[in-house]
Length: 191
Image (cartoon, rainbow, N blue to C red):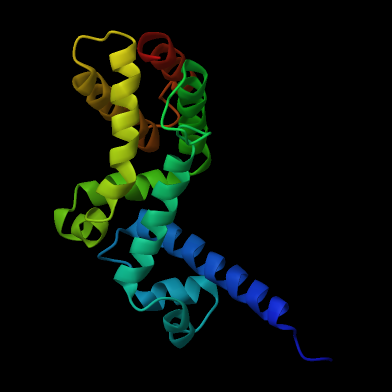
């Protein structure tokens, strides 16, 4: 067998890192951050505990990586042409994409909502979020200002809270929560 090329080694590294983060997300979402250990994650991912530390410095680093990747994926869907101007079509697509993501990545949202309720854990990456979220809020405020909404800041905050609330209810009661109907109402009333 010939030695692996640098490209093959990099591909293996990416795949292994993804397997670890996917497993950790599952373990964190199911057992909670405090109850999850590097040993438990490594065992479930089929890697050694020592190998885990080749990819992540600590459990906190692993959690931060998962959360920043998940938040980044969600925020990447906003203002798709990245021109700072939100059109009705872009806003509609964003709402539709967020709802699709809630359904496809339910474990991530379960973890996200659980962490919000744990201030000591949330602080691990909270400081990184304003830089990610502020441009989105500003763009939404501008969107509502151009529509002539009386208080565009409050309207943008309301939509953010509404999306969080829908996500929370869906994550914990997916079989009872009418996700598609909620999406239609939000688009109709707020876009």
